[in-house]
Amino acid sequence: MARAVLEPREDREIFVVPLTVLPEHIDDNGHVNNVVYVGWLQDAGTTHWNARFDEAARARWSWVAVRHEIDYFRPLPPEARGVVARTWVGDPQGPRFSRYVRIEDGEGRLCAQGVSEWVLVDAETMRPHRIPPMMLPAFARRP
Image 1 (cartoon, rainbow, N blue to C red):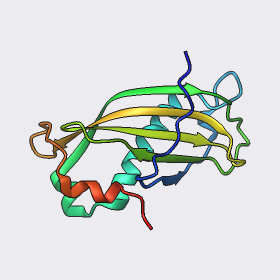
Image 2 (spheres, rainbow, N blue to C red):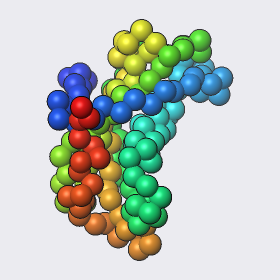
Image 3 (cartoon, rainbow, N blue to C red):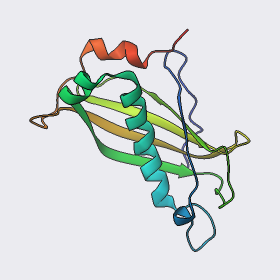
């Protein structure tokens, strides 16, 4: 059962990550393999985190993806160009954030969308940690 189309939240930054369709992404059906989309969901989240937090924060904290859910709408062929992931986060739930990702082709058409659940962990102990309030402004919409 397909999920309703995800729409970005008004109060969250929509972070855009360019994606490249590589020959090894193409499956026997002639389009990007479903497993590649899982990697793209993770890449979008990681790239967003790395862009908003400095080396010290990244050394102190890490994120672990514990769940991915993907809906596929339109295949991406080998010649697809201008593909992007648009990502934003939901509300923190203790150590967890839901991260939303839309994969769009070069014409802005929705090809896939996903929701991933990420858990913040202490980078040294790998134990879950409640998301500190000081992190939240980094994910807010920018003027």
